[in-house]
Image 1: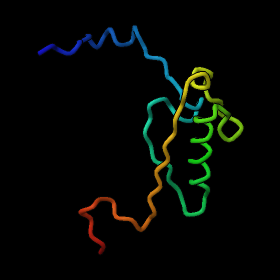
Image 2: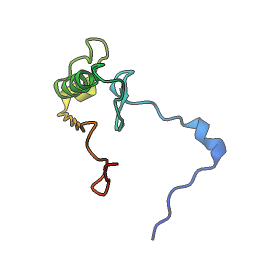
Image 3: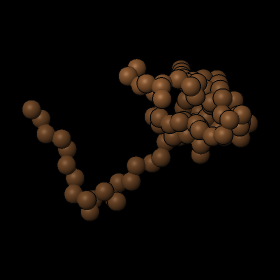
Length: 95
């Protein structure tokens, strides 16, 4: 079994990892998140705009650019929508 690479804590500041953005300043690369808010505050439209921006390589909300490295490669987007009345897990019961 191979061991994981180890680095002393004092060395971590020497090699900071650069933040990589999927959508500049809005959504980081490899991020997973939840878009939440009050009912009817355009959460679905924001999620759709993010997905289209990533898939098409166009700015999200006409303001936040998609890096050119993504535009030249194939990009995919997945949007999952769960209605508020849906149980969170198969074992959930309504009360």
